[in-house]
Image (cartoon, rainbow, N blue to C red; front, side):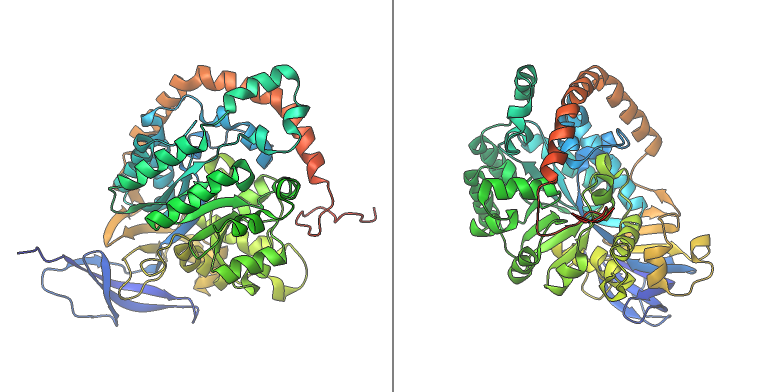
Length: 504
């Protein structure tokens, strides 16, 4: 006889009602990992149900990180002033010399940080050099499962190196540097496709699901993009790619394809309801409409967009054209933390920094829905997570109403987005199981994790030191060439600095 799933009842908490902007006293009955019923205090529960006392707690859906990079967690805080193109130049400095333990460790660090800060699921684009491996992807998936977080894990792949992908850049490098950047060369696309196919066929994780991530369109040959499309269709998984993140990308796309990056990917048949654009800062109205018409998503990463000098995305324009918008942090090597409360706050504030027309600004309700329901849809899990409702997985964050962030409590939607910073997170539940309780992560020994990270740093120090030196030799050329490319005229403007031809 099959064992009956256990029951849990949460009593005494206040459930966020986003639409009414209130926190309402309720009890929640959970059967196994799924919410069975939500009712008034005193809700009947089966005998023997585990009782969770949620008095003085505000309950909201687990936040969902629509875009991050697990391998970036060993590189948090590594450098200050780098653009997206300099970050790509620093890929060896960021990731050289990593073994399976390092890949596992980096994902474990990120998952631990996210869940401690109220995030219960993430879309993780994970790079391995020179091509993805079943073992590496499995090690990263294992880390998420051990922490207890949900994840969509996508091998981030390309068949052209950064230096090959930017028109004219290789020619600008001195001969000795051209020789050195041969070490950035990636595996042929057929070999990479074979590895991804093998990983998809052997996937065996419960709460970690696979996807495919051709990293940046013009870093991939058309044959490779088509193979990614076919692979995603064959295995019914999503596609996630960086599109129009920087102006340099957009200019490179026009030079290579004679069209926008989004238009080119649409022409190749990749854009559909399982397609997610990372960033989309430099999408124009036509691209936004194209994505909206196809049911596609954009993972909006305001912290990273500003950190890398890429400008401010037009999120209102996306929403007006029916694009599904999620919110992400990006990787810790280019946004420095994986705090989804901060990402929501920045999404709100970045929209308000773009002009005086308040109708164009994102509301806090829109920011919160994007970081829950919108991100859930980007992960392809909108029927399972993103809401606290019967039939949805019991992924619940408990905020401490006695924490200073919540004294006093006025409008809980405003305060989750504008006031909460993660320090008010008391407990976090994923699938009916407490992962964080009373501010303590129950699934990971953090002092041990710190020691493992320090040992990894020490072991890789010689390799990363040499890679850093190579970066600094390349930085001078890339740091001059790419900003020059970004000065080319374009019909849209996303920088905070004065628009082209402004009067001094």
